[in-house]
Amino acid sequence: MEITTSSIPFTTIDWTAVPKIEHKGETGVAYWQTLQFPGLRVRIVEYSAGYLADHWCQKGHIVHCLEGELATEQESGAVFTLRGGMTYIVSDELSSHRSVTKEKVKLLIIDGDFLKSVK
Image (cartoon, rainbow, N blue to C red):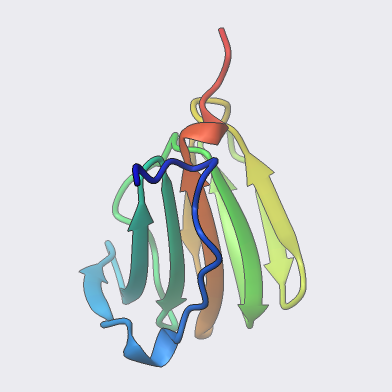
């Protein structure tokens, strides 16, 4: 059976069994636990205190803050704050953004082909 984003079978995720991979920021560190499906990526991401992303991202995401507080800086200068229980959504290439933290933050991030911008 070919699995596409429209045919993912019922799946449960035991996040304790998904390895944490370290990704260094400009400052601080991020730990990603990633499940990759065709056209869909689902991650739990934990940012350390004092994290600053090492790049401006133009990829689309659905970002849900599970714990803590996250500042998302836009390259334009705008800053949006997510606190536990809040979510932001953006399609590919509609924002140039990066993550910044003061304290530790835990996020659920979903991205994939369904967020491609239509031009």
